[in-house]
Amino acid sequence: MEELNLIWMQGQTCDGDSMSVIDAELPDFITFLARNKINLLYHPTLSPQFGPEAQKLFEDCLSGKVRVDIFVFEGSVPTKDGYGDFLGTDVKTVVKNFASKAMITVAVGTCAAFGGIPAAPPNESGSMGLQFKCYKKGGWLGEEYVSGLGFPVINIPGCPTHPDWVINTLQSFRLGRPVILDEYNRPKDYFEEKVHRGCKHCEFHERGLWAKNYTEIGCYAAELGCKGRTTNADCNIRLWNGVSSCTRSGAPCIGCCDPGFPMSMTPFSEETLSLPEDVKVIVNAKKKVLYGGE
Amino acid sequence: MRLSKKEQCKALMTKFFGPASAALVDSMGEDDCVDKCKTKVTAFLGAEKAKEFDSVR
Image (tube, rainbow over all chains, first blue to last red; front, side):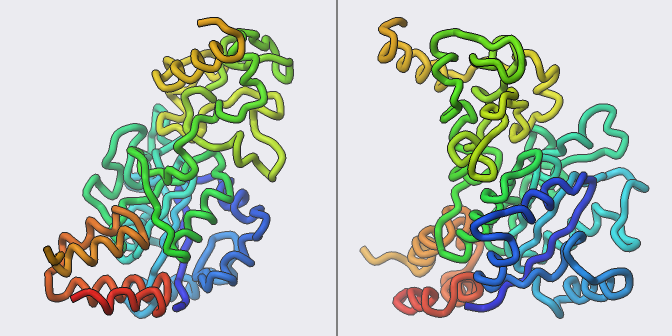
């Protein structure tokens, strides 16, 4: 197996997705890279290269001297001039240059995928995701963009993203396991289920027993605005750090993996989206089986 | 009926990477699709898996 080169760059970001991925367990991020023969060319937090040395590396990548197999981008893309640069080059130009060379391009975190918090009004920097702006396809790279392996930008949202979602997606490309994307270009393996699935408060939801305060026993949907029924992510099946999730730790889901995050989710303490039909069907069926009601 | 080289390449790319990569084969020619796909599969999955393209005729 040939060694693959991965380059990780950042736009407008809090660094949270990097921190999350660096905290991966079983395997940890560095072991994962080593086992899969993935050479981390550059990462803003992990790499020792700085200034001219990093500049030389980027030039070599863009000239084709160094191959870019996997381009990972974290944070939103500021599209207005004067908002952020990478060693003297606009972030937006850096993104276009590297995405055009990459075999696969991965947007890690909701900001890179859909715009996220920097793209919320007033959005003075004109921020957007790599290939989406909230729910709308297009983004900075445009609707038609595909990487060398034929994929659009692979969106792995989350605020932050779950380390497994990133590592397992990259692993799939090393194992020859097909990566199937949903309508927002998120891998279906991790974003097909609703957060509601596997939530330990599900039984209270079906019985209409609503918690009124954080950490209280009961479902967080009606009174605390939990977005778990409308947000796609396997947080309550996969769990975080192998043990917990937002709802399991006593807080409602704020819908951080949804393309409309944060604006479609605010106010966080209120229900902002209508219940999808598929969730209604499941809830009614479960009610009938468990409690004999409709 | 015998499948074209492109159709066979599409099937293998779907198997290895998914439908997104299969769609890429549409932009390739009947003559060069095998080599192009094999190069991509070799890079990501190794020469052993890329050998599956040797049966594409």
